[in-house]
Image (cartoon, rainbow over the protein chains, first blue to last red):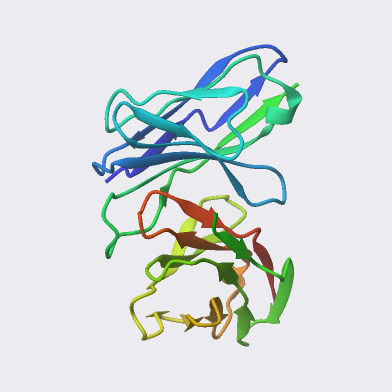
Length: 115
Length: 114
């Protein structure tokens, strides 16, 4: 199984540019999340989704947008990139029901630098 | 909102020795899930161990075990026979009973000394 796949793994943007981080999962998980991790820090939730067509803001949503048109895909859009958005971005997914597989499954991360 | 606290930003351990990483959390819920994740320099987030709050028995995965004290809201990770490959950032995480929110601690950086 591929699990959670993020693309691209690395990207350099100029200030003011826009881009989309792609995330797809093949585990039929209802819940999907976007986190950012600044150097030496923990994870901060940007947006999450509990199912197709449903998204909600996390702790640090400003400057980002998401959509969830299918169960599998949860892209993160950065509009008008700023140096403060330089970070490593993680997409993650989880099942709806808490049980033996209640954990988050993470993608490998996308390192974004805004210059 | 629930909070997860890891009070040890950095820890070190001699190879083959045992180390315990601390985690406390604040919640009013009675049912929830707790996790420890490992993040090596590759930055991949790897699940180390999970604990369901309704289970009294402490979870164990090979050299990794937890000390879950529900009343004290404490969830420490013990790594036995530490290996060089255990060097990483370790994050404690809490999952709500409703299932759609996860809360992470700020992490503990573990160094393993040969």
